[in-house]
Each structure stands twice: as structure tokens, then as C-alpha cells.
Image (cartoon, rainbow, N blue to C red; front, side, top):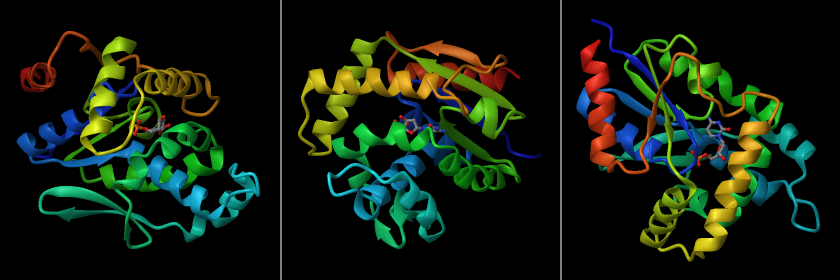
Length: 224
Ligand code: DC
């Protein structure tokens, strides 16, 4: 039997990636965190495509996209993102990347660059992909679609705790402002905005633990 294709979209810090990882392990699926790909391109741009004042030179980035090779490697059960053979898993979580990633993710050239590889990965089935436009644009025919949301205060708390646990310095108010700014740019952009697919199951996990959210997704999948 063909394994399912599952799309998980939603707002920043609703737990999409960590939840998808657990579901992938339980159901024997591959997990792709598409946000990490946009973060990887942003990290590349910050290293190689900046103006004298430090801002990103978008045209330079567009010309350089062909030089970017992003791949996930399995390091003791953890999927680690490599950019041109260099481990960038920690770099992509820094504030600098979070502050710039929505600007990069709204560019058509960047989205086109990533679209086909995301779709090819799903061709054989057996994948859970999380992001913002998976159910609407990348995999509109996914077998299951979920859309996660939670209150801004709860999401701030989760993101702040995650940063601290990664050893990254953080300020709660700044984390909140970054989440609000990213949600706004991600939802209002012209190409592939963050929005719920009409046929997605919406889960508000403000008052749910990670385990409860996973159970709710699994019970839906197993029912069908
Ligand atoms: O999931 P995340 O916070 O790591 O994603 C980082 C950014 O990438 C997010 O602000 C929006 C963008 N993104 C996107 O536009 N489309 C996706 N499928 C995944 C992420």
C-alpha cells in the first residue's frame, strides 16, 4: 500500500516541525521541514549577497541560486541541514536569519527554485512536509492536510524557550515582535501566502500539549 502524503501548514512556532518529526517516526514517513530550506537560503544570502550596509542584495542572490545546494543528512537520527556540504543547522535558527527569512521567502525566484525539489520528494508518497504553502501550492493533492494555529503569547513562549534551549540569546518581547512581523509578511505576500487550504483540518493548539496535538492528528489519519 502506498504510504500517505501529509501536509502540515500553519503559523510560526505552532510546533509544526517537531510534531511532524514525531508523526514521521510513528508512521515510517520521511519528514521535510521546508522552513529550514528558506532559512538556509537566507543564511547563504547573509554570507554571500549583502550590500555594504549589510542588507541583502536580492539580485545578487537570484544570480547565485544555482550555487546553492541544500540537503538534509541523518546524524544519529537527527536530520541536519547542510549548505554546500557545511552543517548550518544552528546558524539557520539565529535571530539574524529569523529577521530576514520572510523577505527572502516572498521572492518568486526563491520559491520557484525550491518548488520542484519539494514536489519531487513527495512523488513516491510516504512523506510529511511542514511549511506555509504545502497544502495550498506545493502538494495540493496531499492525502491529509492540517493547519496549526495558537495564540501569539503561547507561540512566543514556545519560541523563546526553544531559542534558550539551543543556547541562543533571546528577548521575549523581540521574539514576539518577530513572530508578528513574519506572520504578517508570510500571510500578505503575493506568491503562495500562508493560508489554510479549504480542505485542511484546523487545530488550535494553544491549550494542547505537543503530545495531545500529535494524538489529535494521528486519530484523524487513522479514522480515514
Ligand atoms: O517554519 P519556519 O519558521 O522555520 O519558517 C521560516 C520562514 O520561511 C517563515 O517565516 C516563512 C517561510 N516559509 C515559507 O514561506 N514557506 C514554507 N513552505 C515554509 C516556510
